[in-house]
Length: 192
Length: 352
Image 1 (cartoon, helix red, strand yellow):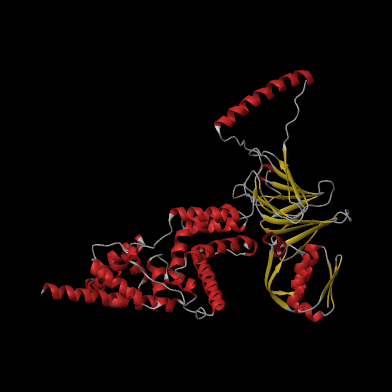
Image 2 (cartoon, rainbow over the protein chains, first blue to last red):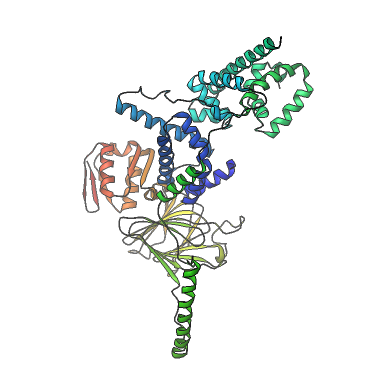
């Protein structure tokens, strides 16, 4: 769905078109669900938060403004809902620290198809390197490479400035570069 | 462009370069292919950056199972306001039922023909649809042209059961409703007074006619008074039973008509239109709104007289939200925000 089409549906929904909102829900569900599952392993929580987010949009439609980019708006809102829920939970249970950076972002094998460039060994190293990045780096990397968000929108979603996002992603890519150089060196060693 | 000074790191961090390697952006792809061909000294650095980004090329988001997505979408649909649709289209689904109906219809037609001979005239079919929102509930209605109406508690809307294309759209309203009218006129037709009837949409609210092309507006009626508040577009108000001048409203204007003083001309004034449609969402949200404005809106929208003892209070600015469905709940919350006791007697409210 193009940004223009989303914006049209967004306007239609704000004028009271329930079907337009349902269409936006359907079109964005995959991306939102995946992102939510990256932030928390609790599937039920993710499903509830997405439902609540859209039901709240519907209740408040008369006072909601035009969204410059619908997908960015939805990602940011889901992130906030999940953060609030996690925070409420942890306060309730006195178990977890209050939410600040408590989102867990982990990567698994299913998310990378084996390509010609990377063999199984390299895949393994890649995943290990990805999962050693900081949580924020992992999240920014996810938004950039799994959902194709530009830096500016990642900054919007994560409530950071664009320069910070650029730094997060750059540092993450540098780690990957080290992994790649290491496996190249290994190849040379084996070849020799 | 300073790409000629780019190191591997610079290429890695460059958004457009990333998009090129990942195949996100064909335009960026062409640009970089050309650039690399023209700048051989940078090729090594660029190649290395490309190799790193290639590792992420196969990144796939895990996704949601299709069945889950469909299930969740249906769940959302059910949770949105129950939508009423005019019963204009036939609802025969199964063929067995259809045949039974054909049989019944044949009997009816035969009887009808006999009746026709007997009476010499055909009984008129019901041609109007009527929607009503019970007291304490709101109802959303989708009109045959796709326009949406939210009827407020205790209000009713009447309209022709079918709307042939090219005919003026008309509805009759008793009570209050929020209208979101679909624009059918060609883009160049913008002014309501000059538009042909075929693209107009008219709400008959008592003695008042509200004509629009495609807009969002609220009609509030209370006792002898009718108010029209425009959110977007343009509306034309007229009183067909009188010689009073027509009145054009711009977004953010409120027009008022009082049946108790029918001779008075229609008047208008600027208001915060959003406040008047707040009942649709059940929540009135405001940011830095002077208390004085909120008081005027509450007086208008609920037909109240509000007495505020402390003029200092009126100058305060508020940010927050009030529930709009129940007046006493709203006033209690309002008092709590202001930190003053609230007393109501009928339509008179005291804040002190």
